[in-house]
Length: 326
Image 1 (cartoon, rainbow, N blue to C red):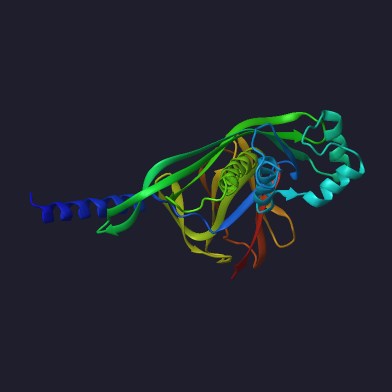
Image 2 (image 1 turned 180 degrees about the horizontal axis):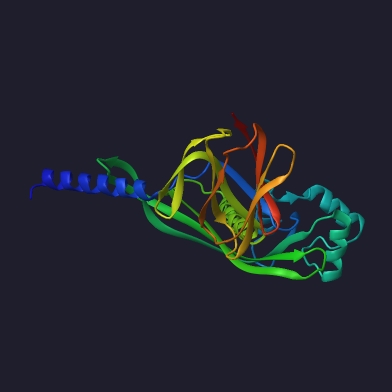
C-alpha cells in the first residue's frame, strides 16, 4: 500500500467516525432551566493562606482565589452572591473575623446580618513552583517543528481546601480538597516576571471546580421544548417543528432532558387551561441524564392560551405557555 492510498483510507475512516458520532449525538431542546433546590444566596469569605507564598502584593494566593470564586459564582444561574465590599465592611463594623477562620456562632451571625444561606471559604495550604529548562519551537513546516531554541518552562500548582458552611446552622456541609495549575514556556533570556499570573490561572481552575461542585449539589438543570412531532434517537428524542402554536388536531409533545438531577428526583407535569385549571398531570421519578417525552392530546380543546409547567424535587423548573387554535 503506497502513501497516497494510506491517506485516502485514513480520510475515509475519519469521515465514517464523524458520521457515527453525529448519528449518536442528540441535539438539546432549545429551552434551559436551572433550579436551586434550596435557597442559594452565597457570601465568599477570605481564604486563609497557610502556604509560604506571599506574592508581589503581599496578600498571598488566598485573596486571588477568593476573587476568582466570587466572579465565577456571580455568573452562575440560580446563585445570588452577596457583595464582597459590603461583606468586608459589615465584618469590620461588627468586629467579626475577616481572616477566613469562622466558628459556627460567627457563621450564623453572618447569615443573620446578610441574609445569605451559604458561606464559602477555605485554605490555600501549598503553592509549588518550578522552573526547568526545555525547548521552544519557533518554526513549523507542514505540521512539523523544524527549528527549536532553548527555553524555560515555568509551572505552578496550588493546593487548597474549600468549605461550604450553612449560614443558618453554622455546620460545615462540604469540605473538598482541590488542585489548580498553570504553566508557560518562554524563550531563554525573555523576562518571566513572577509566578503570580500562573497562580491566577491555577485559581481559575480551582474556582471552576468549586462552582461545578456547588451547582451539582444545590441546583438541577433541565432542557425542554414543545414540538408538533418527535422521533427517537439513541436513548433520547429529537423534536421537529418546535412551536408554541398548536391546533386542536395536534398533540402537544414536550421533550425534557434531565441534564443534571439526582437519581430518584420527583418530576411533576401539569397541563393548565386558559382559566388556570389543571386539566391533566403526570407524576414521575427521574434519573440523571434521562430523556422523557410527555404527550398531551389537544383534540376537543377550546381555543386559547394554555400552559405546561414542570417541577423538579418540589421546585418549579419552567412554565411554558402555548396557544391552541381551531
